[in-house]
Length: 243
Image (cartoon, rainbow, N blue to C red):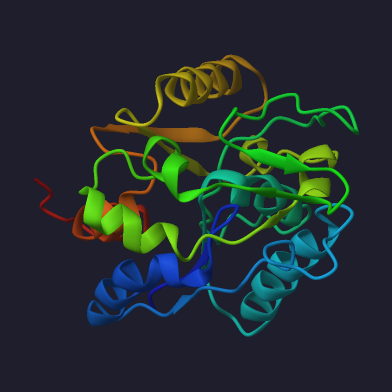
């Protein structure tokens, strides 16, 4: 059988370039890896909600599926919100897709509910930004300061409307799902991740078949790209020796 295609979705404030190291490793092992850009990031004017993110992810997966490809959807952080929504009616027993666990819900419009203090909200401009001084604590806990400073220069404004978008479909209920808990992430984020996992696995239906806990910060594609690529290869059915 041919190898599946990875579709890797970045999180808020980032770009597809965050997957470059992992993408290169996967390609050396014979995988196709597609890393599209979310329309809601660095958008002028900002997006009112996550609709275009959902549509972009769905169209990418649909085109690959229609061409006969098996697809593994890899979503990071915010990317799991539109990613999980985008897969409605795309679940097939012959395909394997991996999505972040997000319940069907939304945040109240016009509030900062669920946002960290380091997420600076400009309601008039319609964006949320993260400054260089907050990048390490929010995204890059296990990276050296000089690397953090370089990465922080590439952070982009995120459309605030995405935080108030309502999800109506939870892909993890119907599609085989792997969830990675990054245990060196911010403590509150780890607590939230563990809550999402336990709540999902306690509910029915659910297809959260694999939960991985790894001593890594919020962005393992930067700090541990070899392990991240190996984990994804395992999700694709390979036997991989991991340290």
